Amino acid sequence: MTSRAATPGSPRPLRSMSMSRTLSSLSMLRTLTALPVLLALLSLPLSATTTLAQPADTNTDQTTTTDRETEPTEETLIRWTDETVAAFAADELDTAAALLDKLIRWQPGNFVHRYNLACVRSRQGESEAAAELLLQAVEFGFSDVNLIRIDPSLNNARETTTVQSMLAKWDEILERRVDTDLERARDRYGSKYWYVKDPDLRLAYVCAYDQQTLEEVQAEIREVHAWAMEHVFSGTDAADQLVHPDDPWILVVLPNQNDFRQWAAQTYGPAARSFTQAIGGHYSHDEKQLVTMDLGATIRHEFMHVLHWRSNGRRNQMHPVWVQEGLCSLIEDYDRTVTGELVPVESWRTNQAQFLAKTGHLLHIRDLCNIPRDRFTTSRPLARYAQSRALFLFMHREGKLAEWYAHFTEHFREDPSGVASIEAVLDGTLDEINDRYADFCRQLPEVPEEVRRGMASLGVTIDAEGTGEGLRVAARPRRDAGDLRLGDIVTHIEDRPVRDYWELVRVLTSYEPGQTVTVRYRRARLHRECEVVLKEAE
Image (cartoon, rainbow, N blue to C red; front, side):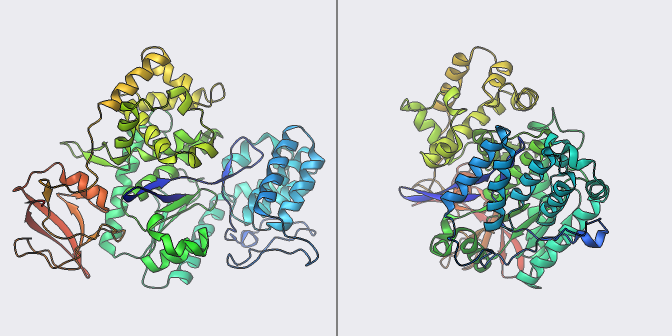
């Protein structure tokens, strides 16, 4: 999930994810009712007693219990889920099954509960019942075929004709699911959106912006993928490039502002309409859906979550929160080498890490890597994100990031925190490495977070809120502001994206007043570029 948190003076992007759990070792993300994939059309066998659950409208109450029952609170549902996991781990299968029955009664569209109950029934030897529950889980959106194939709790269920037939038709299931997803998106967003598949990355785009903007987004996503394969996953996943026919398609929704506000209200509640500036978007691994209006740092961050979750799924692993958020924050801000390759750079996040290091408040690597998820996202979250990104930037600058990730995933069972892998691939003891990391943070250059007096400026008034696509010229420019006009949307300077205000400020710091730069912008339906002589900010 992506949200934005406010710090004194101005909002800053903050990414986090809410979690729920399956009974396997691979946890799943927050669940909502998923789209059916119409398995019956694929001629999958169903017993005479099987009744496939039907998805409820996401805006309506899914409760099927009588009025005499009191609806459980969210805290109660979470407690039942925790008790289910504990009972399953203690081999108290009847208790786990009873709890899951209650969860399914109150959350019938949550496929995690059906998958978990399938695991319980399979372990109890009820193979056909387990197979039917697994089929229902898939019908509601479960799509991790690797987990179905390797989860030991499903050993009995996998022997059934139902599951074997389902696995044999998995590619058809995924194709029908993405087609259904796109059809539902078309019904929701209408004919003015673009609906485009990228089979190379198994992404399906639903885009409110014009064709050229969509093509720019697709090109940047491919660059991020190439960078990640070379600098993060090269030692582990190079063979399949984290894209495989068994991988479900990801729906990438890039809505306009009005549709984004509606989505935010549906996702976070009606109050979200009043603070949509603070919400960037999110990636739900359960729903296989990435939603963002921000075509800059947020979409890069969330797409890295897509790749990282695919990598997790290959190994049936669930990486700690500092890895999830630090790794995916790394490519939020980038520049290019002389050969045009992406390279992560300092950002407002590293400003925070620098401050913490200089004031003696930087967490020791051991402590950072062992922060529980709830504390990471609720107790000084901006500081946690900043330190995690700084640690990944440190490993990247040391040339050890891919080596660390390969060692970490190989030895995950022995040390899921990642600390042992840091010691294994970086020279020295952990305390020595921590000293180098702290010194690295202290020496990070400060990145301006606003255009200060004397800095290079475009010479026009920019709406700092942004549009998601870029930055709007908010006042009639002076005559020497090139071809820029009131209402133009600025997107690039010298082919470097400036989709949000902090990105614009960071890019402008690399130039001096008086330099001439090429600015790309959109005016209504026309995409243009012009030469602008940078002014000295007053």
